[in-house]
Length: 216
Image (cartoon, rainbow, N blue to C red; front, side, top):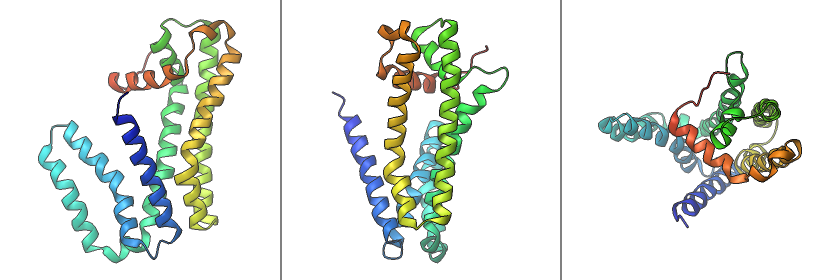
């Protein structure tokens, strides 16, 4: 068994739990909240710099981030919950856009791309289903972004944090399970060829190959 998967999963779960704990009492844990809120975007920037071969810039990103926080510490400690919100709602909207743009004319629905990577040539029934599945995932992530935004502005911060940090990923997992169950029901002639883990392997393949865009 690959030890990295449980270690990464455990670390991510710990990050979410710690983030929720901080947001339940933001005034008491403001500095820790700033560090936790900035960790993901800084990590992403560092990885992008490394992927582009810009090692010096990758080393400079955390230093520049620390300098910025130090120069505006009062602002960051008073507004770090906005950083959490922008990451959460922005990620949900970006995922909705990722799925939704493939529904445009001249594009191949993302779920069709994934199914084609797994099974190759697809029949008409699968093609129709993958378009509906892509629509469903688009609506799901739009709904998640809308709920996150609504809770952030109208509910206590602890309620928004519970949704954002503790409910989002279980809900995504539930969506995977429901979609897979519907797939088995809608495509009975493909039942023997459908495996739940195939979807995750296909996502990784899409990531390695780029956008995975195919002409219809």
